[in-house]
Amino acid sequence: MVITRELLLRTQGNCDIQDITPQVEKALQGSGLETGIVTVFCPGSTGGLTTIEYESGVVADLQGILDEIAPPDRDYRHHLRWKDDNGHSHLRSALIGPSLTVPFVEGRLTLGNWQQIVFLDFDTSARSRRLVLQILGE
Amino acid sequence: MVITRELLLRTQGNCDIQDITPQVEKALQGSGLETGIVTVFCPGSTGGLTTIEYESGVVADLQGILDEIAPPDRDYRHHLRWKDDNGHSHLRSALIGPSLTVPFVEGRLTLGNWQQIVFLDFDTSARSRRLVLQILGE
Amino acid sequence: MVITRELLLRTQGNCDIQDITPQVEKALQGSGLETGIVTVFCPGSTGGLTTIEYESGVVADLQGILDEIAPPDRDYRHHLRWKDDNGHSHLRSALIGPSLTVPFVEGRLTLGNWQQIVFLDFDTSARSRRLVLQILGE
Image (tube, rainbow over all chains, first blue to last red; front, side, top):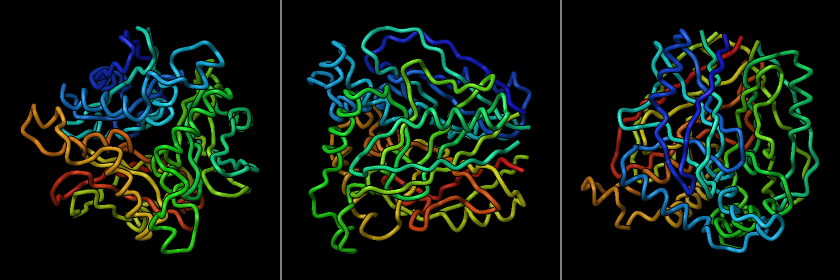
């Protein structure tokens, strides 16, 4: 069986990192499915999904390292071409990836105790985001 | 239900980035499935899959940043061991990843308006590539 | 159908990279499923999953580049906050990702000839790890 859910978020942009585990758990429980996988997907090319231990230290460290890998203040080709300012946002999204698939068993996500699903908004301003949750299982 | 499709590509190698969204959409429409997920997978250790806004600026920016993260002109251990020249290709593939899973609803991929599925060929020469599309749904 | 399996590993930590392809293949064969996808997932925020050509050169190159991207010897905020020493481990896990989905066809993983599924243990000491294999197919 396949159950589709949407998840609506307000973000601050600029590498805002949000813990969405409670919302994913809630959608999973509402699906009635016991065993399977949930794919969390970001429609859009300036967001990303992964897991971290969601505490302010790791959040700051991750923001810091992404500033090193894809600094905001470069003359990206994307800027030159579109008079845009979010070239780094596109690169971070391509590297982290827009999709995350997590197994569930007995109706529960198989996350570790200190592991949360996070959405990263790399864009350069506050945004409303709609994520797709596709739940497959039985 | 599970539907398997193959996607054949000619690439130029050297971080050739190709938009494969039309081929994935076409395979999805041919499957007859309405709701589910499609996993796009690269058999081989020198390719990668992700999504970007497919325009020449972002493409050049992504190629540029991958040149920084894993430069082509280093004495990689892989070269010393195998007299090979594609050590950087292997690293990029490991970082970007060989697999991408995208939900579909009502027979359509849930991509954003400016988001395309891309295959990146990190190898050092032009190649024929065969990607696997595994479509699960109902 | 959904089949859940667990995979138990002993690792050395410190970017120990292990080829788990034989164990995943064995679990797949035991499932009796012919066509579908397997999601390999690491519960925990200091491990990662990807594919590489598993030979000592690529393994050393990947360890080397991860030392550059997220060096072990920095004053990460995670350390300051928790008196911990594995800030770099968390960052590597977030970048590589805790999840990998691989299609299978006729009961075999669709990996390339020189492509293996690897688990990377980024934590700073030897550990026992439990990975989840979620096999969906028919």
